[in-house]
Length: 264
Ligand SMILES: [Zn+2]
Image 1 (cartoon, rainbow, N blue to C red):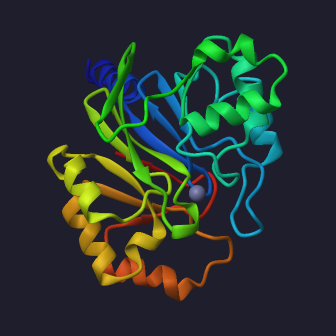
Image 2: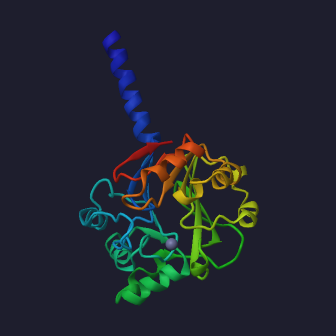
């Protein structure tokens, strides 16, 4: 009887973990795989050019995404925050959508235009590359089991002022996940977005927000997530600079080792 009960409890634990487990796995740079129950979302994970400074996904990993091999089988959605080569490759995302006929991609108009520019058979994926009109309000996308709110922001750095960047707030199985792309640390814009009212479970934030006191306070006030993960960390980054993040935000998680994961 005791054996039966412990077997039942072990089964229940495994069952509930597989149905309700929420995990984010680091791919490279700002690229992550989100797994929640049976849903899987890739964000900024399809690129090959680290601009000589940032890690890129392994080519075997990119092949596995296209071939839908675990853990990239049954993908629910692909998101691209902006059209920079250290976040997105039009060829890679084009291949992914061409092979996986059920997959939708959310992205900026610049991302979609650049896919169209390199793909001869773009028409075959056109209706699955979804984008939003350029405006300051949140836009909402839903598909079975998940909702994505998207808002445009200015890309960080003056030289990138014309780069469209989308902030994504994903809601899935009762959890909220934020990915900023390369959004500028703009107080006015973040006050409009009111992310601090969202009770975000996990936020993926460019590391440079958190290497000084002002930025760390900005993250606490304007994002106020239960877990914060620093991404976009350059390869061979100075460990002392990473230590600053731990100093200002002791609970922050730093994604700098591919395959690293966090539950939320
Ligand atoms: Zn960028």
